[in-house]
Image (tube, rainbow, N blue to C red; front, side, top):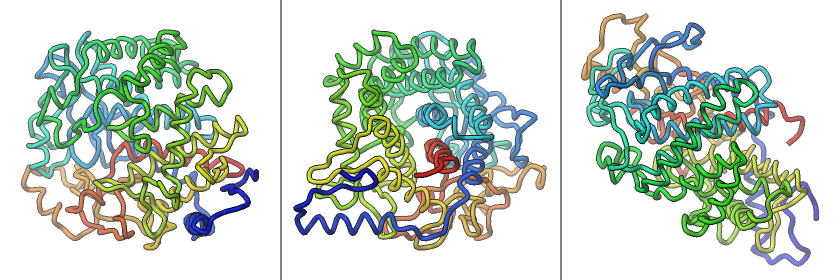
Amino acid sequence: MARNGLCLPGNVPAFRATLVLSLLLLLQPISAGHDYHDALRKSILFFEGQRSGKLPPDQRLKWRRDSALHDGSTAGVDLTGGYYDAGDNVKFGFPMAFTTTLLAWSIIDFGRVMGTEQRNAVKALRWGTDYLLKATAVPGVVFVQVGDPYSDHNCWERPEDMDTGRTVYKIDHNNPGSDVAGETAAALAAASIVFRSRDPAYSRLLLNRAVKVFEFADTHRGAYSSSLKNAVCPFYCDVNGFQDELLWGAAWLHMASRRRQYREYIVRNEVVLRAGDTINEFGWDNKHAGINILISKEVLMGKADYFESFKQNADGFICSVLPGLAHTQVQYSPGGLIFKPGGSNMQHVTSLSFLLLTYSNYLSHANKNVPCGMTSASPAFLKQLAKRQVDYILGDNPLRMSYMVGYGPRYPQRIHHRGSSLPSVQAHPARIGCKAGSRYFLSPSPNPNKLVGAVVGGPNSSDAFPDSRPYFQESEPTTYINAPLVGLLSYFAFATHY
């Protein structure tokens, strides 16, 4: 078989020609190339614009100032720091933990090719883990959110000005949340790998805390949206169930600790916790594809035949996203962008593309292809498919528009983001109140503060994009869009060939 693309057997039915044509169209380059290193630098810089708490002296986005300096005080704890998830001023623990896990995975797999940006990526990761350590400092409790989402979303305020309620929400044995606790354990465990050689004491702290948080998640099972109800729904409601986060947390603890108990937990619970469900999904609410790709690494490295079923699921995931196949479960826009119904589509683009790239690397090491019925996809082909998605984000699309703020000659100017759209504290020292910010929200003018590196939700299924703040599903950036993109850009910036 050829190793550099999609492999087909000699006697190919006519409908397979459609598959080949669709794949070739998707992979057809539009531009001569991109400055992936510049995009990488900016994708990491974006996280500084999302920081909450007291900003450090080396803060590079100067229009931001300290904010939410009393978070946690109403509950008698310190919950300052962390990240605002998107364009609002609430700290949602579920997506923040997922963001942290994906930043860690990006560094684990691609840190060696990040060059000078590795240091900034590690700092972005630590800003997240420092907060997660605070959120898990009380035994048997995980603080999962700071801020009342309803009052926050009713205002258009700078984070430096906000006077909405900073309500603290937690899970405990009476109000379980295995989903957010499992994801938090995964984030702490994954980050412990990153810091193992950089800061051994900090790495041990992260791993030990991950073990305790996972034990809490597994012992007191339940969905946090059932416990906290409308405090987290419909914002980050757990629709998919908590079972995948338990496997996900165990998988990262297995990778980080190499303790037998986690390997046995994974094998024992594979069916019970439904590892094979919805294998074409991966994001803050659904970890199934990520679980199977991550665990398959050990199978492909020849270390864990007992995980073979996870590799079969991983192969199934790959086949489910290849365009043109009879059972493809992912839609593509006319311009070639992965598209899934719902809001903030770029979260699917970057997360699924990250899995395509990581799995292609694992397959390359084992000299394997992915069988998909009558076709076979090579690692090189998967890399090209992932690269095509990245290139679309950076401007190779029907609108010739970059969806990363500050990258390329044309990019979104009116993103749905409070801090970016309101005058900075330096430009407007006086407070801007809750409703006083509405005129900036409705203004047709470009945002005054450039949130460099922010990737917005992106165009619709027809490749159309309204560069307008009220269209939040298309114009709002999120941390969990950027986190997997850091890994993707690292690879394409420094890899000598694709």
